Structure formats: C-alpha cells, structure tokens
Length: 488
Image (tube, rainbow, N blue to C red):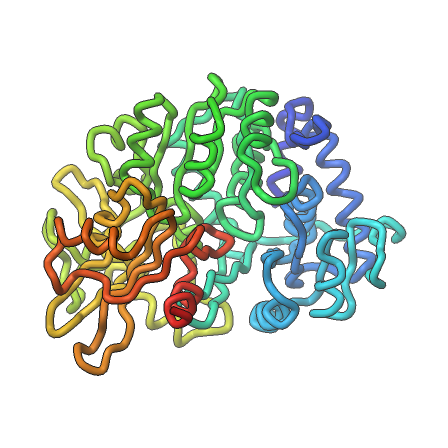
C-alpha cells in the first residue's frame, strides 16, 4: 500500500497541503509529494531504508513535515527527538530506540553531532554533518507494509522516572485521526495551526491528520512561543484549529483576540484550570479541553465547548471506539461517580513499549492500558481527570488529594499556577509541598489556604517561582519541581 501522502496527492493534487506561516509560502499536495519523493531518494542514498529507525532532531517546520512523510514513504520508522535535550539525553533516547540514522536542522546540528557523530542535515552544514541536498537521489522500492507496522517511536517525558519508548503503528494513528474528526468535525477549508514541538504527539498528530483529511497544515514560525506573533499568524492564515497547552492558551487570551475562522482550540498536555476554561467560554473562544497521552496516539477524551460549559472541569466523553474504565486499587471496575485509575483500551492504544516487554506487561491489564491517572466518570460518561496516582500524598495517616490543594492555591488572585506534591518526612511519612507561580508571599498563601483546607492538607514547604518548570509537552516537570523545593 502506498503511503498516505502519495494517495492524498493523487486524490486532491491542487489542494493546499502546508503553509509556512512566517514566509507565507504554501505547497499543494502535488508539490509536497514531489518534494518528499526527492527527499526520500536522498535519504535512501544516505542509507535509510525499510524498517530503519530514522531519528529527527529539528524545530517544528515544513522541513520536519517533509521528513515525517519521507520516512513513511521509505518504510522507515520515525523517531522524533526533542530539541531541548542535552547531548547525553539525546544519546540515551537514540540508544533506547535503536536509531539507525539521524537527521537534524541547522539549529540543532552542533548537539546532534556531539550526541551521535555521523548525522545528516536538511540545511547547509556548519559542524560536519552530511548535507542531504548534496546527495543525488537514489531509486528506492516502494515498501510493503500493513496497518500493524510500527510508524513512530516516541519517548515519554520521563518526568517521574526513566523515559520509555512508545511504539505507535499506522493503524493507531489512522484510528486516532478518524476518532478526532468525528468529535471535532472536518471542513475542506480547515487549517490546523501547528505551534507545538513536532517531537510530541500534539505537534505530530496534525501532520498525519491533515493528509488524511485533505486539509491544510499551517506551521508556526520556529522559535520561542510568542503569543502576539502566534495570534497574528492565526489571523493572517484564517486558522480554524490549534492544539495548545494551558500556559500557551493563557498567554494567547492575554495577548488579544482570536480569528473568527477558529472552530476549536484543542487544549491538553496538562490539566486546564477551570478559570482558564471559563475565561475562554466567556469570550466565546471555542475551547475543547482534552485528555490524551502518547500511548493512546493523542486524544482519549475531548469536550466540545458546550460540554465544557455544561460541566466545568470535564475533558468530555471518550472518543469513538475508545473504552475508558475506572478501576480501584484492586483492578475492580468502579461505578459512575467513584474515583479510581483510568484504564484505556481501543485501536488508538499502543501495542507497548519498544524493547521493554516487562514495562509493557506491567502497563496492561484486563481492561487495557493503565494510564496512572486518577479520574472519575459521571452518569453521562464524561471524564474528570483528578491527578496522577503517584501524586497522592499520605501525611500522618491522612490522605491528601494534591488536585484539591492546587485548586485552592490557584483561587488566590495573585497566583498564576501551582503544583503540589509530597516530600519525605521523618515524622509524618510525607509532608505537603507546593511550587507556586505568582507574585505572592507564603504567609498570604497559608492564610488563604487555611480558609478552605484542613490543617493536614496545608503545604508545609513552599517554592515561589516566576513559572512552573514544564516538559516540552506542557506537563509539569516533577523532578524539577522537587529540585526547586530542595533548594528552599
């Protein structure tokens, strides 16, 4: 079977495929197909072929989009690497994924060479990498692959331990795209604005979905997220959809107005505060709180704006064909309204962790993949995500829900965000600790918290910072948060 881009180019050759938001340059599907064919030939000359693991270390850009499609055309497995990692971290991720070849851009060439030595670049080389543009394209055979063949190897964020490498098949990604379209809808004029790193599912999913839908992908100008620039690009290019993490969305709401063309803001990557969702609803911004993870190819559940308004705090119902079961600590399914661990099954769920059968076996049970997230479903089937199971705090024999403490801290007018976790304590087993972003004193926070929380729930250790430490996917970096508290 031919790759998705080749089939799309035959079906709608003149439709817009990719737009470079910064320059305004656009490519039709026929033009993108031609560029990918040539790039695949150059990669073949470099030695990339069927079943090879092709790592890409590059900023989100049209070049990254072409590399993703070229890997599929060659029958190679794409291994996106995050550009914020150190050389040692990159080498570790590459070893775990059995990387065969590495391609980078100019921005990341130096660290790629340091980490891997022999690498290729899509730009002019300045640090000894092989310039792909200088290679003559080689003829390659069309690979034979089926729906169960691995298509992506993605590292988890590793915020709570050693990163794992998630295997995702073409069937996983195809089913995810279909289920997302049934929840969000698809229009021929859709333009998905991509400003998240393409080393994460939030940035990768639109690449594949746009080709399957036959719609356009608008790639944001690379570099640090600039809310004013992002809004300007969204207006200029009549963007209809965008994927964001809460911190980015909050900054966009502060920066100005959204284009009238916008149909949805897919808000995920981390828990969205209720007040942030309410701000969007009050301004009639079509916010869609979502819950997803790499192991489920992105979305698990998504709330449409009307669902978010009807039940603030929900991430909506599971997507079509995705089964979500809430189980207790013994693995017994819970009734609506009873909290427990969220377990997910369905065609979007990964077959397991690459090269780690023990982790794979531990992650799956009778009801499917154990997410490690605590949550609850109401009688309408809507999901509320509470917190990570390993975030639960037991202090002096009392159970503390960190999510409850976070909501109280966030309600202080000078607090932008907060994260609560348990630290080891010789006397009580654990003590409650909080990292708070905002212009506020610990005395003011304690006084505010005492109005709503029992004494054993009050944080005993504080770190006041400008912003919470986060991973590239937008989740709070727990180990970095612990380090901030240890410094106090």
